[in-house]
Image (tube, rainbow, N blue to C red; front, side, top):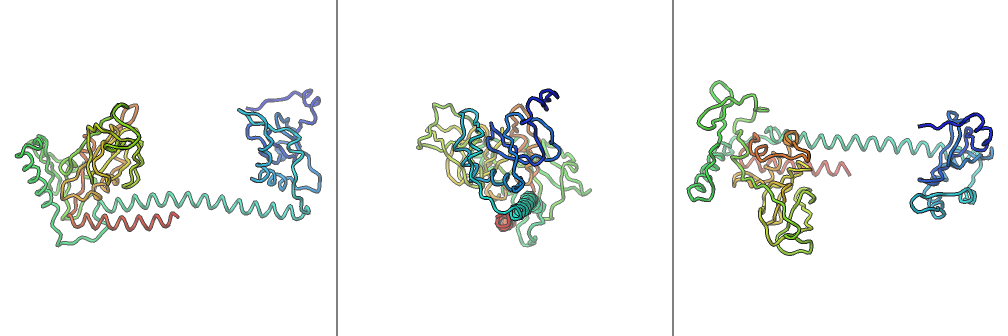
Length: 379
């Protein structure tokens, strides 16, 4: 938003006119920041800027680099005035002591600085490119993992269909013992003679081929996540029910640092309502969606922004986390509300690719190795 001076205003303020190669130094705000006026701005008026005309024995760019260097910026800041808005005067700049080599050397120094800055810019760009490439590489590893293409198949492994039978038998035993209620909408996914996928649900077989995102190896199986986990939704506590001095159960919220298995604990409670236990897979489900961690702490209370997925005994907890990571884009796409959130059904109805148990472990080991290599590359 340019402000224009009239011809008469310029005539009355000739010392405020910018000329090519002048140094322009900001007087307020970022006080002391210096730049060189290019030909484009020759004849412009300057407001709240210190103008410096240099001797012909001085390189404008050399002096500008000197003034912008950390050493001289510190010297300038020591003489700043003002509290809310820093401000420097002409005397502050006029008294700066500068090292002055011969003009030819000034020019050589400027050329070297510009070459180094160009290299630094290229390194920054390459670092950004590398960072993006590493993210894509990790995503690709996850994608290969849940497709059954990351580690070799072992035909001697117990098929995943047997795992699902054992899970069903475990649930049936818990129902008979009165520990859980029977799932009225339990599903079973199978491949028909026509090579289509069907889901047996509520006594009916429904063709779900279009829902199946990709084919799996022969000893893998598709199932709904609800068949392999118990899902706990968190609940917020009132400030009277928790403390930050330690003692009681750790209280995990969406603000906790979800970084692998490292959880930030800064609140505790003596009155937990929803308790996650060791080896639960924790998923943030409101506000920030899709952060994943494994509970390595023990019994903890989880807040409303978190779900705890408790895997069946034949589902590796790390592999369950891999399933979620591999489907995180879909999970996030299901969020809605002013403060984005996902419902329980989004997680319970996920189509989960299930390999044999031994292969789950091999996949986890392979991903750990790949991620270690990628972390080393990023350093």
